[in-house]
Length: 374
Image 1 (tube, helix red, strand yellow):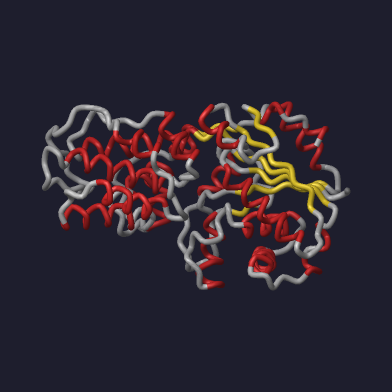
Image 2 (cartoon, rainbow, N blue to C red; image 1 turned 120 degrees about the vertical axis):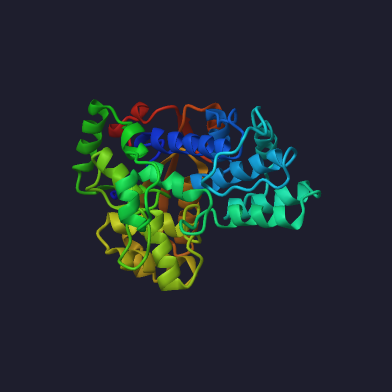
C-alpha cells in the first residue's frame, strides 16, 4: 500500500470554529430582539444537536430557529411578522424551549433541512392560518437565498465582515462589523503536531486535502462567498487542495443541471473529487470523473491510481464519513481496492455519540493523532 491521503474537514477538525457559532448566536439574538423576544438565546448543546442531525449549514439552523420563534410569538400576537428592520415591543420574555423538543423529534431532515422543517412545523401546528404559513414558507424556503431571505443578510455580514459582505454580494452593509470568522476561529493543530503533519506530507506518496461544506470561491458568474478560503488561510493550509460547497454547487448547476446542494457531502462526489484534486487533476476534470463514477459511467482508468491506496478522513460530523464510505463502495464496483479509515473528532458528547455510529474511532482533539502511525 503506497498512496496515502488525508481528507480533512475544516470546522471542528483543522480549526476551532468559533466564528460560525458566534455568528449564529448573534443572528438568533438579533432576530429574537426584532420579534420582541429578548430572552431567547441559542445554547452550545442546541447547536451541537443541529450538527448531530447533520444540519451543518447555519443558514438552515437560523431559519429553523426563526420559524420556531414565530410559532411562540404568534401565541401572543398572531399578526407579527419578521421584516428584518424594526425592533418590536416585548411579546415573550422566556427561553425557546420548543427548540429542544423540535430537534429531539426531527427525524426526517433530508437534503434541505429548512424545507423539511416547514413540513414538520406546519403539520404539528394545524392552527396556523394561510398568511402565517406563507410567512414561514418564505423564511424556510428562502433560507439560502441572500437576496430573498429575511434571515440571511444580517448573518452573512456577521460571518464575512461588512466589507467582504458588500464586495461579495453587492448589498449595503447594515452592521459595520469585522468578520466573526477572523475574530473567533482558531487553528486547532498545535505547532508541534502541525510540524509532524508537514513532515508526513513531505513523503512523495502522501497527500492531503480539505473536504468542507463551507462556501468557497467559484468561477466567474456563480455567486459563493470565500469562507473556505478564509479558513484555509487561517490554518495556513491554503497550499492544500480544497473542495468546498461553492465549487460543488457551481459544478452541479452549470455542468450537470442539478440542484446546487446535490453533490455536497455525504454525496460521494465530494470525497471522490477531492481525491482526484489531491493527485493533481484540475477541478473540472476531477469533478467530471467523480460525477461519472457516481452516475455508473466511470472509466476505471481514471481511478486505477487509487487501487491499493489508503484514505483517512477526519470529520466532526457524519456527512464526510458517509461520503468516504460511499466513495469506497463505488470504487469497489470497478475492482478498485481502497482502504478507508474514518476518524471522528469532537469533545461534545452529543456529537461523539453520532460519530461513533460510523467512525472507526473518535477522539476529542486532532492533536491526539499520531501522524507517524498513519
